[in-house]
Length: 455
Image (cartoon, rainbow, N blue to C red; front, top):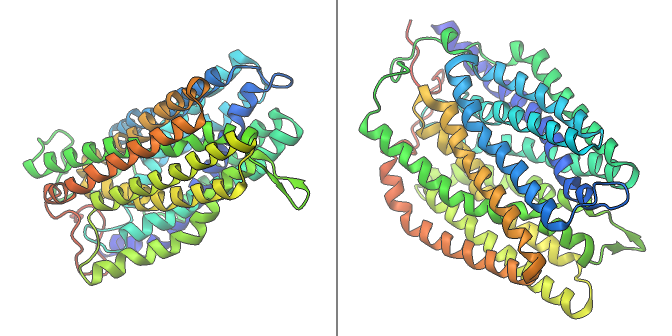
């Protein structure tokens, strides 16, 4: 037992680095494709020549189903595969999906999209669950660890649009898809080569190979009252966070189109490619994530750290501010033809603040509240917020064809502000329903995540 604990402690920072790197490469392929997918679909010369409404609707279905599939992917890992195998299989499927899309034929686009959806379902929830397995209950570093992991997500989100987006927009759409597939191939290879050295044996292991857990071990053991309350909290926060993503995911849809046709993108005599704006958010992540990673432990030390619900409420309010700026930018474009780039940069800044208040905190929250035997499945439930939000984003963005950009941007601002105010009021109740799972405990060297492992 002592040896197992030692391997877990020594593997913790290195294991976080491996998961960070693997997720970064997966995000290269996802955000790389996200940066140009709608542009490819509406391109009448070299793309498929669809209408904006049809393209945004497909975008919403694709991104929504990608996250909806994480529920099934998490369940399969919890019951059969384990998180490690699920990540490898999922990454391989996504690689193949990108290569099919690179052929630029509509039937193959649907086939490739299907592989991407299934692959994301197996990959996304399970790699996040493994991050949570690196920490013991009550570890004050958990939220910060997920914030560091989130930097990996956004490292890939920054590189993807520059690499894949530039190749797609300036050379050929096929090269964009192919480079995204190669990025996923690198991620899978890195994980396969280093998992044995950098992850403790119990992290991501199949159910039959995991050490016996002293509490919550039985897969069919009835839920306790505390566990039921905690699961309810996960579902309630998932609902509110879906509203956030419905606005945030306009970045790859309506905001992308607005940037392309209604934003003055010239700087020092050169036109900035539309896809590059997809990396602005990630640039802000790199600047702000270290601040948030150090903020939560410091607030916890003095007993002033906001509850998870309150943090997420602040995130929704920040999103509302971003769409106020976009509403003003759209009105400016209506008046003079083009809006300045600073409107877009400001909007991405507030969206990034909201994202850091909400997304890494949410990943951490699920690993705190989910019963160990349902960890990945409930992480998949958490990603339902992304599924619903992405689908809503496509449907809401498509409304701009008939109602105009400004009207849609204003509606998102009002809706997210109202949701944020309501969630702020619910914060104390949700914190009580967590039954102490969010409480910070003294750091104990050698403690394991999830529960004590018995011999």
